[in-house]
Length: 107
Ligand SMILES: [Zn+2]
Image (cartoon, rainbow, N blue to C red; front, side, top):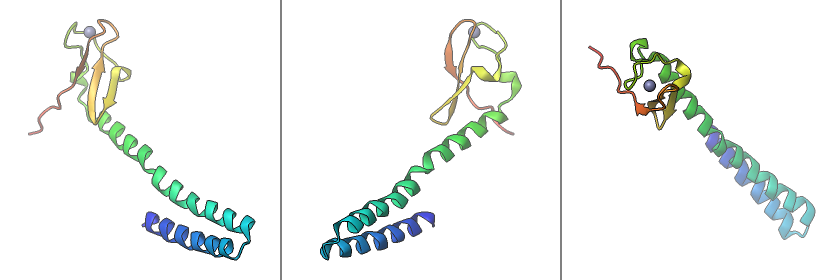
């Protein structure tokens, strides 16, 4: 919804700026054309951080029992967990092994 409004707003400002350019008022025309790009830029740029936050929230549901290194058995804190592409990876600070956590089946 916000995107649609941003696009409509951009088009209106862009064409008003274009009208100024056609009537040879270059300064104001160029200013409006540049300003018309800003809402588009803002609306389409904001999305990425939101997706990253959702992925990190999944990490809170992992069973503490799984936080042991498969390789050397050392207990791992949450700082050893890393979320890549929606999956949780462990990098052990003791033996430096890296592997992916399989999610525990829920029944
Ligand atoms: Zn280890």
